[in-house]
Image (cartoon, rainbow, N blue to C red; front, top):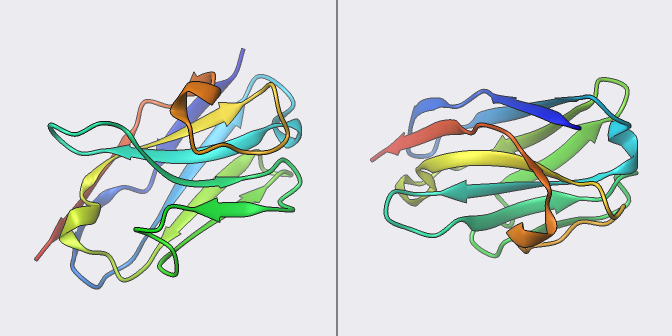
Amino acid sequence: QVQLVESGGGLVQAGGSLRLSCAASGRTFSSYAMGWFRQAPGKEREFVAHISAASVSTYYADSVKGRFTISRDNAKNTVYLQMNSLKPEDTAVYYCATRTARRTGSSRFQDYDYWGQGTQVTVSS
């Protein structure tokens, strides 16, 4: 069993920055790939970024590439999402997830088996 708790969301003006954190507990965090997804009202869940177990590889959705950075600190059992140059279209509930079956990430939400409760990010224009 893995428990994930996101934090760091909030209200920010366009062009601003936020850093989301996702604290994991329960199992060997360093063995699992981690991902961030988001869901805006009335829209489907959307892939944002993923990172492999040993931080060897990262991958981003085109919509956030160059603005967002995913990282992890395995000593703290935490994954981060640094979000810069935020836009109103980034407004959504952001979720972290863990893929316990593999050390490499995926852009498919079906490949993740544990999810956090989500944190709201609102970007005003």
